[in-house]
Length: 467
Ligand SMILES: Cc1cc2nc3c(=O)[nH]c(=O)nc-3n(C[C@H](O)[C@H](O)[C@H](O)COP(=O)(O)OP(=O)(O)OC[C@H]3O[C@@H](n4cnc5c(N)ncnc54)[C@H](O)[C@@H]3O)c2cc1C
Image 1 (cartoon, rainbow, N blue to C red):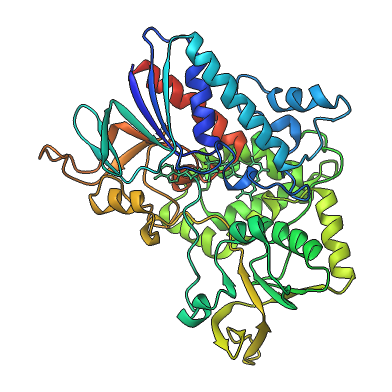
Image 2 (cartoon, protein in one colour; image 1 turned 180 degrees about the vertical axis):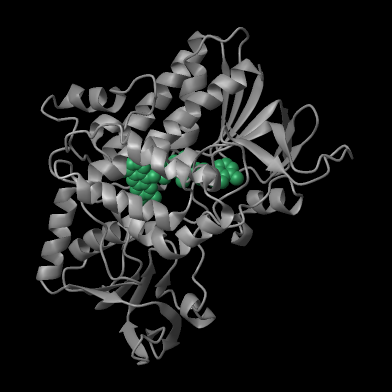
């Protein structure tokens, strides 16, 4: 087994791996260095929100941190309120409480099992993988470990291209909506706000700010102008195993064919809700994605991603109702279009949209523009210090479609060249450098939510201890 392991990242993925490792009685005690990056422990962006309007988009019964304890989250919340049902969509803040409680429990259990955990509230600046271990560097300090795991979550938000330097400098263009929501103080509140993007992040932003700024009018801009689909109030009856559909998809790894098969399966099954059929693909998605050739993946990203994300990442029904009443009140307008540029004009921002099929240029004016374009996994374009250092030294390789890094399905990272001690090992998997969560999107596609992360964490803990 790897005796000394660095876990890098302070979010739910890192916390889950920590919990998996500490609850086990390994043959020898473990030494874990947990570099948390300095933010709120375990909650990360997703569960750091304090707003009761921000709900989980997964039902309570499916949100356990641990693959081996499927009722974990439900048991936690029912201790305070036995009336909560497994089908409920609960506030994400409550999930953050659960993560914190589980981390405290894991640390306690680790002590009982003789493990040693060093919680280091700093970001790692660099990693140097060598033959027998990895050197972890933060600030002036460096530490040697046997293995390291990257659980970095979402990359820092970047401004979209087309946003002028003056617009950025004005403070009226918000690149990171979560920072704005954490403070949300603008005095006086803006009159007109444009939100770029219409996924679940946009929904969170619109619900929160429309409540805090009751006089403000919002325009939400996206290529298709559509909100995410919504979950049903009650969980739909489970479908069979969709075995026929999945087999047919395996037989023809072609995105157009897959969409055809999926539409056909939905149209032919009159007893099952379409959501259930989409969800039944979830455990099979990594296997299917692996079989999809590169050009087909690119085609999916170009043409079908938006529709897939909209159907797959759904809002809870009560959130859909709140969004509908915001629209009915006239305070929210949805706009189809693609942002081409954002300029500062006088004291406001002017958005120019790409010409529509009628060739008419369109502009929007706003006091505040908020970018809510979702999860960024393109390591080639990030200014994240650690990721840049790893890429520059070819210690990791970028996914060619901007979906994280190249890795094996079980999380071993691929490197592109020389080892630090001069040996050449082109395109090999590191034996002791792993990733967990969003960085594995290019390998698994489904790799950002807790149901997938907890499986990855469990499997990774097995690997680290079995090595
Ligand atoms: C708004 C939102 C809502 C979501 N809702 C759900 C939901 O309802 N259900 C669900 O299953 N999933 C949901 N998700 C998906 C969510 O991404 C995962 O559930 C989970 O939070 C991912 O955790 P993570 O640890 O991978 O990433 P993060 O929570 O992003 O954590 C990454 C951590 O790594 C730290 N870090 C980064 N770089 C370094 C470094 N160099 N050194 C040390 N630390 C570093 C960061 O500071 C951060 O603490 C949601 C995501 C978002 C953004």
